[in-house]
Amino acid sequence: MSGGYLTDLLVGGLTLGSMYALVAIGFSMIYGIIRLINFAHGDIVMIGAFVTLGLVQALDLPLPLVALATLAAGGGMGLIIERAAFRPMRGAPQVTGFIASLAVSIMLQNLGVLILTAQPRNFVCPDWLSAPARLLGANIRVIDLAIVASALGLASGLMLVIKKTRLGMAMRATAENLDTARLMGIDVNRTIMAAFVMGSALAGVAGFMWGGKFGQIDPLLGYVPGLKSFVAAVIGGVGSVPGAILGGYLLGMSEVLFVGLLPPVYAPYRDAFVFGTLILILLVLPNGLFGTSTEERA
Amino acid sequence: MSRTTLRLAALCTVAAGAGLVALAQAFCGDYYLSILDFVGIAAVLAVSLNVTNGFTGLFSLGHPAFMAIGGYVTALLVLPPGRKEMFLPDLPAWLASAEWSFAPALAAGGLAAVLAACLVGLPVLRLKGHYLAVATMGFLIIVQVLIVNLDWLTRGPLGLNGLAPLTDLWWVYAVLVVTLYVAYALKFSSLGRAMLAVREDELAARCLGIPAARARILALAVGAFFAGVSGGLWAHLITAITPGSFSLLMAFTIVAMVVIGGSGSVTGSLLAAVGISLFTEALKPVEESLELYGLAEIVMALGLIVCLVLRPRGLFGSEEPRLLARLFENSAP
Image 1 (tube, rainbow over the protein chains, first blue to last red):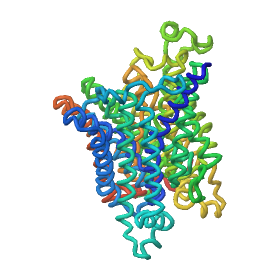
Image 2: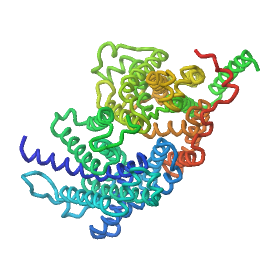
Image 3: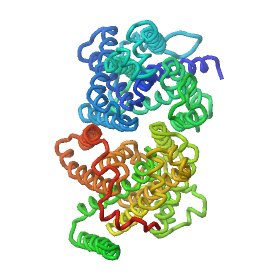
Image 4: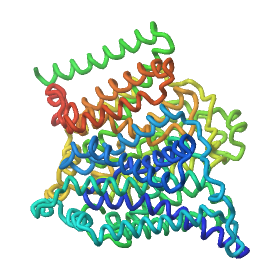
């Protein structure tokens, strides 16, 4: 095995991990605050990808504007979903919210098929992004580096917001105890909304990255990456943002290494590997690496 | 009404149902017959998932996985050796030469699903609430991946086609009657009460001496058995079985039926299954003529959300009609 191949794998794992991490952060934030596994989160990745494609193709906007618009589109979608589906059910049993999010996910996927057809579309990306980059003799492209850099940037930005701002403090308080936070005068509904908006905005950007990396997008694209990002969040400990980031990179890396280092016969089993890992983690380490609470999980 | 009259009335209802089946077989065209078959299978699925999700509160999304296991086992046992030789040359000799009749093959499919349920249940049932849901969904995806990749056993993504069209309305009706009987009898038996107690408060149930772990695994196994049988029925109705059919969308559809009907209410999930599947079948021509594929799913998802907001306990809650309750109470099998 050449060093170049190994570097290829590592960079592949880092890019995949970056996208998982961005999506997993949203899962974790939303779960941390209202104990909801939001299944529709993966479909926001799809929406982000299509918004980007639409903007690039139709309006030919410059890339930074497109990135901002994708953030806004993801965040807006999160806002709508929270308002329409989850707020009316606040206080219901956990499983109710879970079923509702499954319904929202099915709805988004089918609306996508209905409006955009299930036919995959080519994702257009500026040439300089798909240009090859020289790094230790590996076969990588500029976009891989851009994905990792912007994911790390966004994730650390988010951590700063959570650590340093009043809103972030409100979010941490609400995650700790929703009722007490409300008694302390925190506008809980606004805080929950903010968590949805931020988490979904990151998922939207992940969609942009997904399209750029793999070159084709379709309305069901968010389904499997969404579920895998959830696995990443579980690995890190659902509810913990640093855990979600670490879990995303761990999962992306191990998935790529699983496919790259084992004999090719095992490659088709990569999804089984990921979800087998999920079941294993839930059983032996239900709080994940960074999770703290020991309530109803296992 | 006394017990004896009630029992007579129940028998008469079953007989009247059989009469309707005979009428339908004699006068309905193939298209309408197949719709009735699908409705019946949906009812079996919803009622059996209700034992797992409704009675015991184990939120499982693994029902299509059990269906797939049952369907493939049934199809492999029923398929004539000649066709197996063509499709799957690498089968072990005992399986390649097997040619069972439909009834034992269906039962074997159900039992295979039970076996899978026990294997996956022992570790996974320690989880609760939506963590269990996610783990069972992981199980569903793992089963799909295995079916796609175990070429020698399943013919991979192509699936098995050209199966004999063995499923008719009689089979569906018979399985539905058995499923309903088991579900009602279970609900009013001490085991069913134990399951409901586990759902309401597991700690309190265990304090009363209820073996909660046993109740949970039994609930998963009973649900899996009927899912496996309906997988066999389904495969021999559409005369093909492919891994793609057993998707999360299917899991969602069955869950929607259970939730809208009322988690814990057999009658509710029966009615919801009939209503929802008739509705989706009716919408199919509309979808095709307007080229709006996916419309039925969108409407169903919307309906589910509205139901969760306005009537979170579903149409029936955990209740059954009074007469049925009187019929089955204290008559545990």
